[in-house]
Length: 90
Image 1 (tube, rainbow, N blue to C red):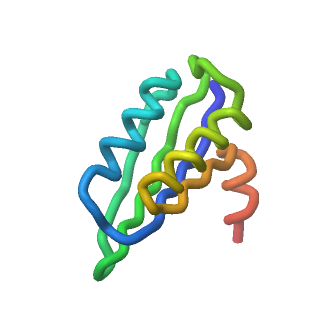
Image 2 (cartoon, rainbow, N blue to C red):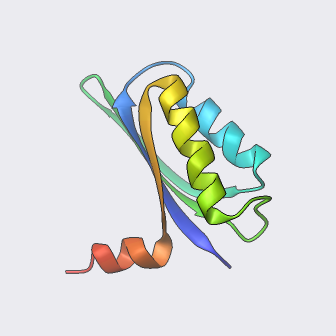
Image 3 (cartoon, rainbow, N blue to C red):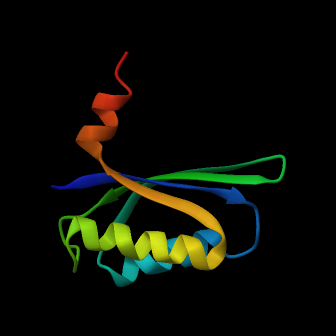
């Protein structure tokens, strides 16, 4: 099973979760876990996603997420779970 971490950061506004999760759904990406919070006026969200049934390759999904982020005014990044784990090891 291929997994990744998707992070979303930006100024809070309506529809961020719906648009990001909707795009992931359209791409065949399953959201397995999600954590989101609003810190003052800033929206932050981290998702653990399963890419095993994705309709596009990892890099293509990253491009789609980046494009959506620019459209809605947030920063969206995706990293493979293995790289994310290695970067955050103590």
